[in-house]
Structure formats: C-alpha cells, structure tokens
Amino acid sequence: MNAAKPGVDLMPVEQALSRLLSDVQAVKGFETVRLQQALGRFLAEDQISDINVPGFTNSAMDGYALDIDKLPANRTLPLVQRCAAGDTAVIRLAENSCARIFTGAAVPIGANAVVMQEQCEIQEKENGYCVVFPEIIEREQNIRRVGLDIEQGQTVLKAGRQLRPQDLALLSSVGIYKAPVKRKLKVAILANGDELIEPGQKLSFGQIYNSNHMMLMQLLEKQGFSSCDAGTVADDPQHIRDALLKAAQEADCIISCGGVSVGEEDHVKSVVAELGSIDLWRIAIKPGKPFAFGSVQGVPFLGLPGNPSSAFVTFHVIALPFLLALQTGREHLPTGIPVRIDFTHKTTIREQFLYVRLDHESDGRAYLSAFPQQNSGVLSGSAWASGLARVPPEKQVRPGDKLIYYPFA
Image (cartoon, rainbow, N blue to C red; front, side, top):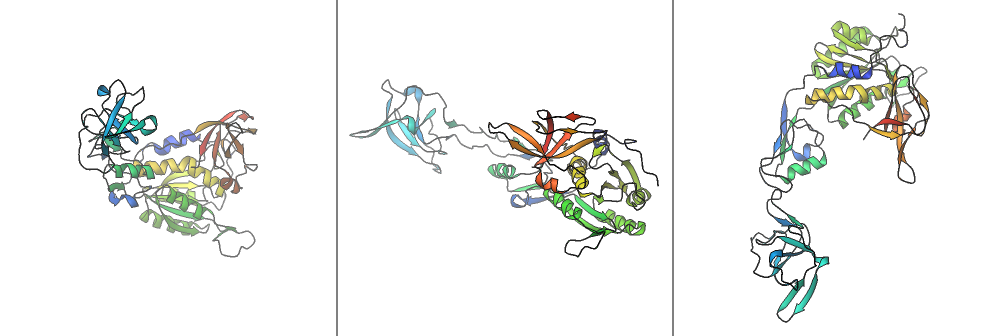
C-alpha cells in the first residue's frame, strides 16, 4: 500500500467538525434521579421554579430596620423590636421606632431600609435603648425583596445543561430534589494492535502498555458518559470485525484507537467500511492526522490514532464535541481564550495543538509556556500541561504573540 503524500486530501479541523456535527441525532430516553446522583448528568427538561427566591423580603445585613421617611431630625429612634432569621411571625414596624434585625430575617412591614450595625451608634436611656443613624441612608438599602434572585415561574436551568455543583444548589434553592436527566451516552472503547499488552503484565521486546484504554474510559466518565470495554484486539480483520459488531449492539457510539492509518496492518478502517461506512478520514491536525469518522451498522464510529498523545488531542478537539452533541442534541464547541506566549514555534500545512501550561508573571499577567517535547509520541506532555494552545497552519509564532488557549479544566 502506498502512503498518502503529506498535505494531500487533508481536511481542515473546522470543516471536519462541521461534517461531524451536521446531522447528529441525540440519544433518546431519560430517567429521574435525586440531585445527589445528578452531578455531571445532562438535563432532559427545562427546570422551572414554583416559588419566589427569596420568598419573603429579608435583610442582607446584621443591623437595624427603619422607615427612613419617619426618621427625626436628631436621627435617633428607640429600639423596641427584634427580628431573627427563622422567626415565623410577620411583624409590623412599631410607630416611630426601629428594629434590631439579623441577616436573613424578615424585614418588618413598614420598614424601607436596613442600616448595618457598624454604621450605627447605640445609646442606653432610662427606658431602654436608642439607635443613632448615620447621615446618609438610601431607600431599600440592604433589603432583599421577594423574587430578587428567582421569580415564580422562571426557568432556572434549560434542558441540555450538564449539571455542576452550583446548578444542583440552585435547584435545591427552589425546592427541587429530583431532576429528569438524559440517559447516559454509552461509548464502547476498542483498542487495536498486536503490540499492546495490559499494565501489570511483563513487557517483551516490541510490546507497549495499553494506556489508551485507561485514558479514554476516564475521559468519558469525567464528561458524564458511560463507557464499556470492547476489548483489545490483534491486527486481524476477523477479530476486529467480531469486536465491532458486538460493540455496535451494546453502545451508542464506538471509539477505536489504532488501525486507521495507512499501514499494511491497519485493518480497522477497511473493516468499518465493510460493516458500514467511512465518511471522513485524515485531518489537517498535528498530532492526530489519521482520524476516521463513519458508522458500523448505523452506530457512529470514531477512529482515533493509536499514538496515545494523538488520541488524547483528537479526543478533546474533535471527538468530544461530537459526543456532547450526541448526548444533548446541541453543539458544544470548545471555547478558548487568547493568551500571550513565551516561546517560538512554527507549523506546517497542519494546524497544531501544543501542550502548554498557564503561568503568571510577578505582576499577575498570564502567559503560556510550552512543553519542551511536542512530539506525538510523548504522552508526558499531557500530564504536565494545563491545556492546549492552537497554532494555525503555516504560522510562525514568537514570544509576546497570543494563541488561543483551551484549558483542560
């Protein structure tokens, strides 16, 4: 088999993503789970509040509540009431007086301002205590009115959102304790190569440990997907065929590592074409040029390079946006930020994604440092780095230039 010439028939990354995302059908089905089990899951329906938050007008400070329209010239009012958080009785502010109030407590009816205690002076009189208020008091200061945060009937979270701890807290704040979440996308992971053995076994000459399985299964779990092990198969078309057919019966999507390049022992691509189709192959990306996309008996197939570093990069840049769209039915393209660099680099016809680390100068300015070895065979850069920097094709960059940075976080 003749190797393809460098740069021939390579599809730009943006075009490849557009192809992958052009006709994605989201997985069907959802389940209702308690919020304790909902972290990382994707909402199946909009979540609407049945209540106002806050549900009653309350104080944002420890201090004193008053009606500023009735504050006398000497700015002093007798202290005759006390309002604490958790009090269930609704009280009306006593005429020509003020009330001691604590954070979260209901503001008395008739009060229109709360002054923090540090701004007031307390004076003891024969018949009790008085409060001397400062010169400047604004109407409504330190008062949280009903519905300030959330109004009854408001959509608090939209369908398709991946739930974070703060999202679960928001749902809890409106009394929601269960949420409908999409069925987890099930992704089968298949590794291919005669040279692969599992960690824990003794290496022989010419063998390498299978790191892709661990990496991909954990990346999938981190994203809220479900992974299943489709095995490690030798470079044999029949073994590959059997594994792919089994994976197509069990999963919503298949990811393979290895076997999609141009070598004589790279059989995965041809077997996939036999069982379904190969719709896209070879992308203008470094590392990760031999990336394939197609289907096995109607089940989407993503063929990542066997090189672990290339598999890591193509998973983040190309595979992950497709998987998120398959899970949610919505586009989730990576969002980067421009950051200054401190290194020199030059790309060829393929745009390159570099392992970089975000650091800061003594004055707080951010900059990116590059891992010394950007070779596609060096996986240690992925553990050293905090993210990827995107360098356009045929581009020379120097210290002080800015690149788009995609943090792993």
